Image 1: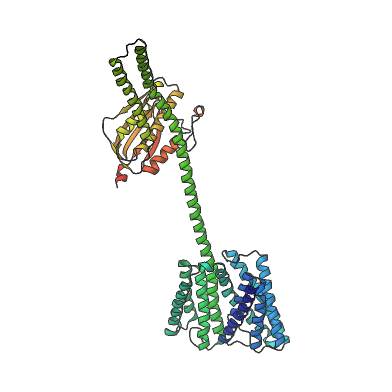
Image 2: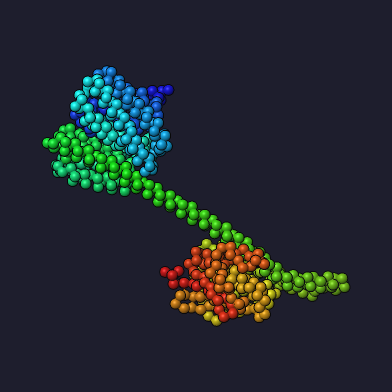
Length: 539
């Protein structure tokens, strides 16, 4: 209740105070002026934002303003009632058209302007002037001119103040008051220099100099600050006109009125039409950036998920490799144990037997331990790129796959006559090589190639260092060769392939090391090329 009463009192004081300033500055005829009538803009903004609770304040403020400006009590009461009704109508229509109070869209501004120009002010101007006519406040000869002046002055006041105040009410926490004050002082000084110091008399020159600054403010800062500066312009130039200085003081009252109102209208239109378009563009760009950020994050999460899938698939393959590498040492350990047991049962367990057991069992255990170390290093994360030997990496990859490849009668031939160094992540390169040679092995088995071979060599040309991994499995079908690097694309239906191996290989090389992965068919197989551009890396 206290808050509502405070709003009514505040509204009444603001309406009356701003009304006195407007009428005095414009040297108005009673309460009728063709210039900017400030209280109408304030009243409509308060009514739309706070609702019907402020309407009594509008009524009181308008009544006191009219009565103190020589309007008869009955006419003053009638005009106060009409303006209150206008405010209620504005609240209703604003909600009816589902407009937003924060004025963030072009539709909101355009619709509000249409309500003011074509509905609210025609209603207020016609009905109020009928009251004034019947109350003998104006004559029949003044009637139509009075309607236009009332309509135009109120329209200017509402176009200038209402959207600005609605945005301020909706976003007051984000308003930097000190910044607004500093900009206002700077702009006042700018206008003072133009109109008083340089004594510019040409209205169109003044318009171009003033509007250009407003446009810069819209582009560099925001529409709300530009709107505030438009209000500063209106008040300051009203003051200049009142004291008889500036660009809008001339011998012809008609020319002066037309020029000044055109000047203010140009600022209002630029701020609220061009300004809102710029704001919508900024929001669109911001929204687009946020969408891109989310999509990039989503894409990274998807890639991380696919990388994890690929690593799990590789782990399954490597566990199979470990099992094959351990099979022989385990068989040897079993035989050694059988020897010891047999000697024990024959009561021939002596120092020689125990020495044999110690030496040979240790060899087999060391072999198994080394196997674990090799595969453990493969899954170790690398934080930084470093120089490493390509031959060593390729040899390690071949060593890991050797047992399974031997079992499937696949020969891997590696030409390592020359030592090549690369700068990157060695474990990532091992993953890629394992993916490629395992795919080649599967293709050789699936195509039932008799003499299964994989050839690996390293060459150097103008593109950089190239690792060639070739097979004699018959090549890749030309209809799908362009798709084999796509995620989840697999030709291994019978083996339940994930379709991630080659995709992740390409992503690892391109994103982690800025290398390239290509493939083409040769005479009797496929050739995968890993292109290492060490020149770019070092630069």
